[in-house]
Length: 339
Image 1 (cartoon, one colour):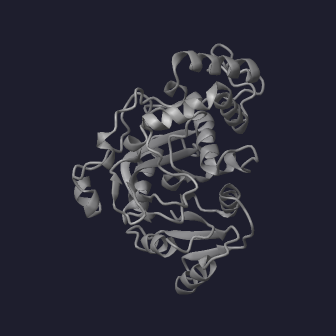
Image 2: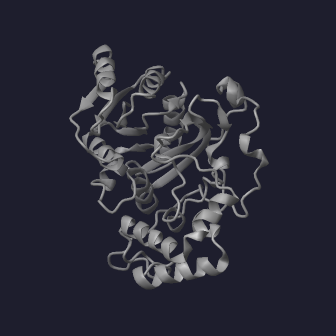
């Protein structure tokens, strides 16, 4: 089953060739790469044209124009027609097993579900600096993300998945189209759609090197004490506004409440099956360390001297109890959302 890999570029010349080479080096060869540029002013387009010239059966350039990352990926989603789809950032490096291991884990989960079930898989990442030296062997650990916390109310506040690790099927793409203007980002919107109407499968194996550099649109922030001091200094009002924007993104004006699951206009969160509260079926193989790039083997994270986060739970659980209660009450009052 062919996979459409969707790559959005914008002034990407610095790291683009390295990323394209890593995609071309995939052990699983059943894929095609769809690329759309968002109006680059550097050497991105000539690089893309050269790679397309050398790989005409694999790389396809879509007409582009000035666009945000979200708009670029939304256009790519609309153009994709394969049964399976992956997102790709322009500045990372994929491990050679990324496509194959993601596909295998996806198919294992899909085999246990009714045909046509919307399904999204996401994986862990290796966090690297711009020279691809080790920062952390796990993005989940680095960001204090619990990949099993996949309830809708949690995902509204914090997206547990990075778009560049996602693999999803056509039924989910059709439900998520079109990506609305209110959406924060294409990947968060897709995650919320899967939480409402489908299934989500986390894979604890890292599948790419997540490069951190000065030009990241979003990156690994490392949720340490300083991060939360900055967030809390914004005050409850700004945090509440962010929640409201995320609620509008999900279109949850009247989500189903307990005992009222059939409310008109409500979205019923999908069953999580055996995912929440239990480890995913697809755990990393015992020899995973030996298959990682050398700089990530048995090397402690740079962040080991940081104090652990007081709570590893997602969303409002990062907030003090008093602020969390106020935020949840406001959401319930203004958007009829049961937190």
